[in-house]
Amino acid sequence: MAHPDVLRDLVDRYTTLQALTAGGEVTPELRRRLEDTAYTLCVTTGTREVETALDRARRRLADAPGTSARTLPDSLTTAGPAA
Image (cartoon, rainbow, N blue to C red; front, top):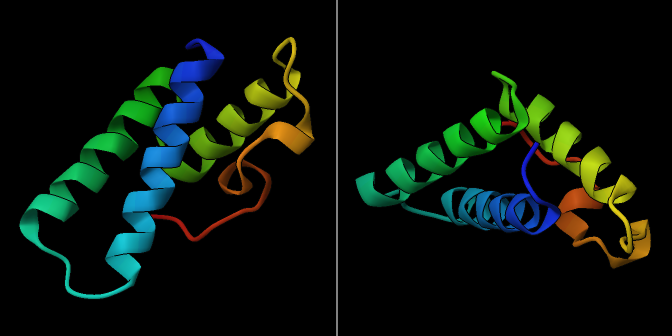
């Protein structure tokens, strides 16, 4: 499993890109970046589904030393739509 900082960055990037795709016109570049980030998140967490990867990352970050649920970004403490 990846370092908590890596997981946090991936989840933040994924949720930001996902919000951008939901907010309007989706360019091929934006779609590719979202798909690449989802793939990397899945590989990093050893999963095949992005929702499972997000859940696993959320649990890993909650269990990481020095990290409490209150310090996690909203993207990690609330479930969002799947890609």
